[in-house]
Image (cartoon, rainbow, N blue to C red):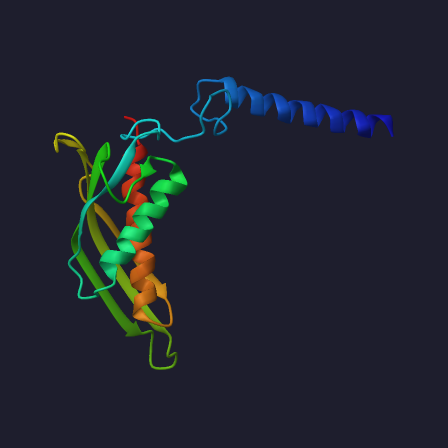
Length: 178
């Protein structure tokens, strides 16, 4: 009985030391907010305390709702990641342009025996961050490409999923610090 309890404590101690070494070590891993005054993510926008608003959102699809959907998912993702404080009106530290440069959606039935609707969505988008005072370009994501196949009941669902993933990839680039 004592050996089992001792082994459990040793295991817990080893796991705790491993976690602490990750937090304190130079490996790049750590808990959000541990040892800092803020849990905001660092990005090209700084520590998340600056403000940002849309300059414009350009899209090349024939779906009229895509521009509004892109605005919603970009705003939501910026807020979730705490990259900046979002402003809808007035002056802001940064202006964000979302430029969809390419889009394609193809839907087809899987085969003659199975009537499953499959859709392939391909999206190309670029994010441009400008200084809110001067208008100078501070950062460009470059082209962000995303393509995937979806088994969905309608084409709009495939489009929405493809757009979400393209936005996530673009904002991932915004947070890369190399």
